[in-house]
Length: 226
Image: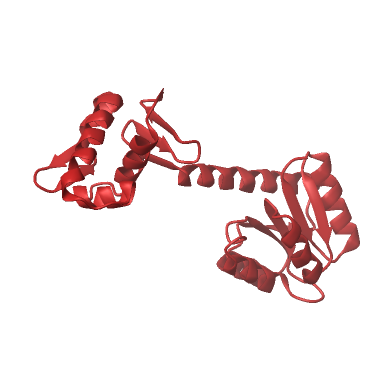
């Protein structure tokens, strides 16, 4: 099955239509008529997106949304609010509370699917950017543990990769040899600073022209920047 989408809607006809449309479009979809059932469901499996009605019998959609945004495991899950046509205030409250989009009732199935796809695309792009560090022609994909120089994949040792990631996360910040040693190798011995120098030299060589972005700060340590 595809991505899991939860639909929290107390109107049986709307909920069943939405779940059917999502499954036909290739998504895994589960419907809930109330907040309590929804909370139980997401304990078993985290959804990729939530369609959330505002008017529900036990807990309104805005409260559910705020609860999701306060939870570490659910705060980044995209939410599309289902709102009544005339309820502009609800739309504003939903967006202010962290909703990613809203769809106004009555809505067409094609419009809903279009909004779902757009929000999922945007979320996937943001997640990919979060996992990627870029400076000039140099890109580090932390999730895949890959490094690219001007689009070309290069091979680094585990410690070289950790060192490069650490430098890039601290772009334009001077990092002392001791600080690098303690962070990457977990020890602090003054005489071991040569370890850092050797790995920096190896990195510069492997990164080619991008290696020039690693600057030596005499008597202190290193930094990376354009």
